[in-house]
Length: 419
Ligand SMILES: *Cc1c(COP(=O)(O)O)cnc(C)c1O
Image (spheres, helix red, strand yellow):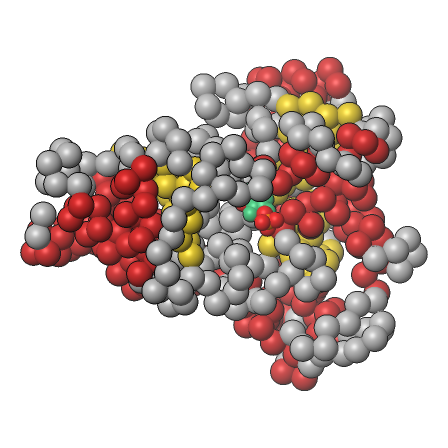
């Protein structure tokens, strides 16, 4: 396949995405308006960007950041802190704060995200896990690779769990991500049979992918990472928790100390990047989702299986591409890496990673270390040889990187059925 043919595929793919892109733009417009309204109502001013030191009593930036997150996510209260080291840290803080010995936690959408399995301590024994603390854990299995609403209702009616975990994004599983309407149905089912149960949504990768957020669809509390969607690609670190005030207060006490809660905590560098990041987040999320849709259209045209298809409405950032063999995975990763803004000269090779049974190949060149709102691609070297592509804060970058990946594969797999 020559460069003229690839150029034709690029143009055809862009054309095929027109309708989906218009839909994504509409969501971005709506969410930008939501953020602007929150900033206006909170009367955000530049003096609130300044950092503080020490205890950070009356830190205006910290308080304002909590306020605007609460407004954007329709929460009674929010806790937004650079002190959260990752998304997992925010999720674990909520679980540890709200669950005591003998309480029952149920994951409603099958097994949760890999790192959460360590926090819970069931699939994997971990010191100081919830399991070691005496928290009981169950899962409602997926049915035909989707959530099982009847199963959820039956189990919650019978067991009356203290808290249920609902993961919005597919993460690295093959099920579909949850839409806001899915979340609405699930929380309604839980509350109809067990009104006291706390509905907790892992919102990682889902923020701003739709016009509403989970708290508007019946969730009690949500949490996520600032180096994903809501940080807009420029928040340097951190995480957030938002929801009912009493639940967020409990999480704040767990993050700091009982009685201290969210009233302390300084950040000497200041808060401008967090505010600017949240302002950019709806647009940046749209860039990443458009990039995923475009990749689906290109690789579909090249004859590879992709999921979701370019026509499927998106509810998170992740695109899977079935590359059929190890060689194609390596070529794909090289193609993406060559068009990374950082470390473009590096060649990704499959390697062992702690906690994974298979070798992993990974392409990334982030400004913020490990940021997955920036463009990256990774996958375990095993059948069905799936590459996970996510992020991209500038759509043009995704176009160039995806076409580069396509070119690497096409130039090197001649005669293997993809000419
Ligand atoms: C990213 C992610 C997390 C948390 O991962 P961190 O790397 O700790 O930020 C949890 N759940 C889902 C679905 C995720 O995508």
